[in-house]
Length: 167
Image (cartoon, one colour):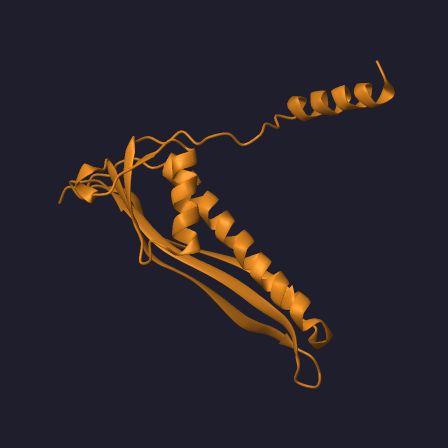
């Protein structure tokens, strides 16, 4: 066995010993889902739909056919000034990605209570690198969108019916 192969085997044994495993498919507690979004053609809706299909969730075209209805109430990104340099130039921005959603079934039994997730990233800014910083901003928002999709999938894996409380 070569040294490189021995190191690879040692590395893999170390990873498995610590409990590491690759993220697989999420096991969702329902079979079909209707996805309702403000814009079905937005990059977020397209990526979320793809992630649901990758997890073998049957997406249906009508809410009446679904076990669970996932309603995305809003999804938007925001950019705020975080800090200024001494001469009034922007030194840092804060990027925010907001999504609010909830899930229920045909009988209006809540599966996921209404919730809003907000992701933030800081972006150092430099006037001398405008194009590079614009590209970095685009990449950060794309990464935040993918992270948001994964967070919603994780929440769906834990979803269960919560009947209304008896009065």
